[in-house]
Length: 243
Image (tube, rainbow, N blue to C red; front, side, top):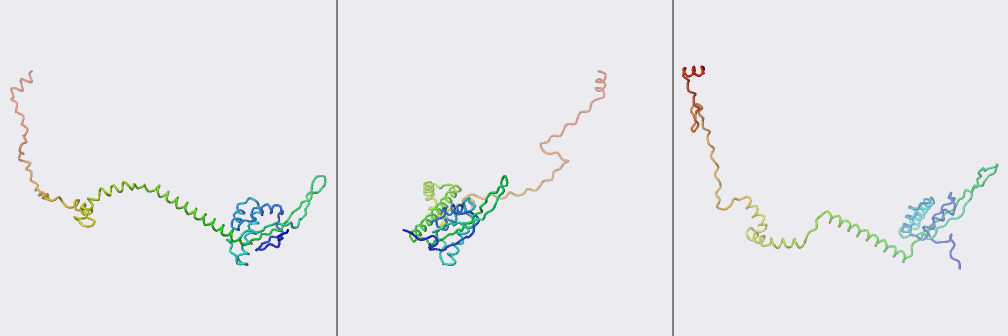
């Protein structure tokens, strides 16, 4: 039982002819993306370390663009249905060796073909569900991270303690509202802070006293004047000198 030949597969294709690499190297990379959806295949090629991945990545983008512009297909619904590399022309060169001999150098080429087709309905539904679940998971992680950051910044509120405080302050708030109306507690506190207490007389301002002139000549009351030294008699002074 034989299936469809490679060149008879349905889908939109892009072909690169006479690529300057061997078909073996191209096939190693094509095996990585065969059967994957277009977005996943492009991601695999982007992070592949082989040189052939860069060339095949451009070819895959060309095939997706052909399907979108020429066949009017949605790029998100495409997958790599077939990809293969055929042998191309081999260019022969010579390298000189010892004793005048020559060694053949083969510069191989290949023809690379990438075919993209629309995903089956079952696989397409599964792919959409996986993408929706992935988006929901990322959103949930982002929200959880934001909530954790907010919880670290703001202190946790004790609901039980808050309710106890409200219950304790409820009678005072009700009494203030009955006496002063809505917002009475704030008005009462403000009035107590501003208005003086009832029955307390305001202190009268002290009268400024006029400065009294001080008589420097007259002695002040309560201040004793220094006593003048008594005059010595001439006889007493002579006796003290003789001694």
